[in-house]
Amino acid sequence: MIMNDTPGGGDERAFDGEAAHGELVSLARRLVEIPSHDDETAAGDAIERWLRGETGAVVERDGAGNVLARRTPPGVPADDIRNDERPTFALVGHHDVVPPAQSQVAAGTVESADSYAVDRRDGRLYGRGTADMKGAVAACLLAFRDADLGGDGAGAGGEAPDLAFASFVGEETGGEGARAAIDDGFVPDYALVAEGSTNYSKAGVTDVAVAHKGRRASRLLARGTAAHASEPDRGENAIYRASDAVDVVRELPFPQAEVLGERLQATLAVTEIDGGSAWNVIPERCEITVDERTVPGKRADLERATELPGVDLEIDQDLPPMACSDDAFAEQILEAARTAQTGTPEHVTKPHATDAGWLAAAGTACVVCGPAEPGEAHTDTESVSIDVLERCYRIYRGAAERVSRESGET
Image (cartoon, rainbow, N blue to C red):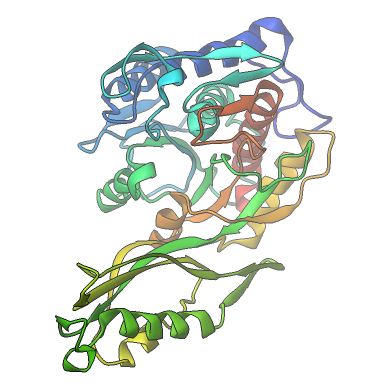
């Protein structure tokens, strides 16, 4: 078991020996090896077995395939995963991945992979899901098991929270698992979402993201009237209408938001255009795709384009942004991050959406903190630093112990 002589504080934590170091690497490798781009069942099975074998927690596999677990402080009986009578702090990840490259498949093909390839070299693990995000899931599992929830009591008359763990399915395809769990009543009071996968931290430091952007994927559909191209005035050119819509999008201002002193700026870009049927036909249809990175509480006014004749707006996806709703909680996690490393972490923002957006929208105070480094997630060279995973373990364990000890003061 990974131990620490000073739960919840003190000098920088260190892994206690090679056995502990090896346990994290071994667990991460085992999870990464299990294919989960098309069917997350086997990966969920492995996480569920580990939790049942290594912890005394209440463990559940819900109907969507999410794996949920809950620990209670000493002397408090374990009960239902969704007990909303008690405060809860959750460590959150996901075990689905994007499809691997053939070079990342150890046995079988991408379509029917028996296992993924995992390679360890130069202090890193290489393979699909190492950075996004089975390495961090392994660190969460160990921290969930090892965290000392006894502490000094809740302090100031408060109630020490339960510690929950959640590994969702479907994060890469729109957050289906997180939404299903929330709809089924899993809404912790506080959550640390262990997503790294993009380089939102400074070199050599693991920062704490207190906000991230969302993503709204939209289509502007321009309709016209077909005619022979030799008589263009007899029709209405849908491409021209779409071009006018592009001009509207180009001129829209980018919304901004500020969270705990950190500023986020939205972005908006036309990324695809599709229209026309033949070189000699005035097109009756043209479609443009718009990628919008949203900020908390604001959206670009895409509806302005629909004031043009023949232009309609359709929203295909709207992944919510996240803003931490509890300053004191954000500071607690930052203190845990400071204790866990020699560098100086800060509150930062993350440019990409995570399941924290769904949780925050449901009322959970969230931060995001994971192996944020240039690990090239979603590529055939995806990797994660073992040292950074160890640092994340220390942060997650320290966060659980700090929140347990100080909950009455928040």
